[in-house]
Image 1 (cartoon, rainbow, N blue to C red):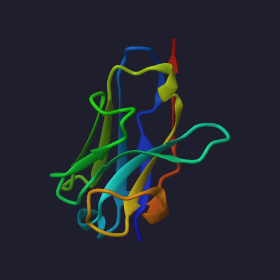
Image 2 (image 1 turned 45 degrees about the vertical axis):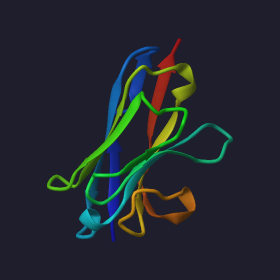
Image 3 (image 1 turned 90 degrees about the vertical axis):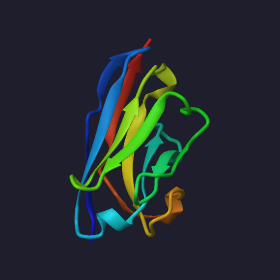
Length: 124
């Protein structure tokens, strides 16, 4: 069992930065790939970034590549999403997810656990 709690969301102006954190509980965190997804109102949840169990391999959606950075600290059981150069189109609810295996890429159908989500709002 893995429980995920996101934090760090909020309101920011376009061009600004936010860092999301996802604190995990459970003994299997270190062996799981982790990821961030986001959801717009009335839309399907979409992939943002994922990271493998060691932190050595990452994947990003094209829309965030070069602006967002995913990382993890296994000692603290925490995964981060550093978001820079934010634009209004980044406004969404952001969800942390834990994969069913240790790999670096997974889609939302392969996620075993989800956090409750944190709202990110970027004003123009």
